[in-house]
Image (cartoon, rainbow, N blue to C red):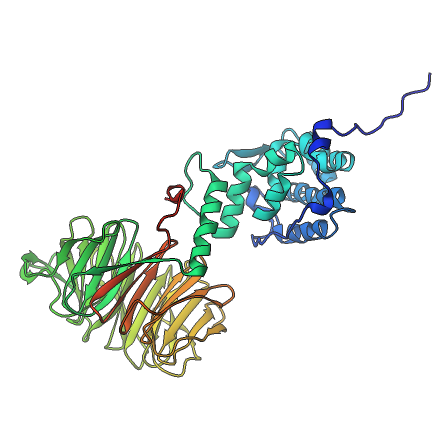
Length: 529
């Protein structure tokens, strides 16, 4: 008896009922930029998605003719990358070696155990035979990996192909990748609804571009407010009235004032031992508070009285006073190891965070050093001499100068990955620099007076600038385009501005702190908190 010919299985009826015309599906290229694959154990983010994105683009350019072939190419890319991660260059190599191990992202719950290598061997055949129905026949981990190449609009379109595609496109791990690719790393909690989070962030981003904000003023200071920093619970401001105020961010009420005359006994700290005899000293600044920064342990403030004070952020009691500068302290920053201060005396001082001892003084600027930032072993400083300098903390040597501004600089920011520097000053321009090469990548033009303050929001890819022209501007970090121009809220020079994903807080000479909230009236905002 002749053998029965082997044929491909027929399409499931349920899929046929739900399958729309391929012409109606609009796929777009994913905006991914992760690193290349390297041999050795890697997680699912190690896939070379640069090539994968181009494959998606080819797949999407001819939805009628190449839907299944495009998916097959995409799937082949995924499988080949997984093999390469095991030290093989092909599926055949993986068949021969059968390297034991586990690939995947343990945190997400997606882990691929390559002991069951058959799922990799059958990939090409499965897609070739099943076409767009391959989703039903592949392990969910592989399907989720493939769908993670798509952007949010393509995932929405995939939901209408069939029930299996809908399930795959709604997978929480897929949407987690989409969220992180679009908005960067985010606090991950068990059971996060990433698709819902993505929708909320999209609405919030739209509000930023449209300028849909509510304004609230915090009043209490009696003179110009030079500096501000905030987190999700509190706002801290420093003023020419010699005080530091702590505000409740949810109510806008002032809950603490530092600098009203109470006294304590404290060891002064400079480059001497912290165990020096205790002397009576005021626990507040004796002149304008020009700068401050805090984290979850300490608050550091700098003043026209030539000193910095380190405070406990829990009790707001002073821990030590740092004294070595011979003029006003214009900016401070710190990390887990060092406190860095810069001064009108043209120097930068590096202090040991724990002991308060002076570790090193950096000299080289020919004018007041108005701003400073630290990232790891690097410090960047900006001066009235129109120069930006990049320093090595360990050696104290200047690595390079950044030239391009033609007038004095007032502010500088350093990206979290230490790759980008942003500066502004009296020439009214904002410049974006490559920290490694010293090259000016882009110049942002728009302010009509001195750019007094900058905030680089690396996570949300935004630059916030404040100027003596009384405006706060929001720029796209990647393109340099102006996103939002806020002009009507301050009546005089803007001195400081900071931002997070939901608000901008700025200060000025009008003695008021302005809080601009982009989330008023938004639903489901709690999913981002």
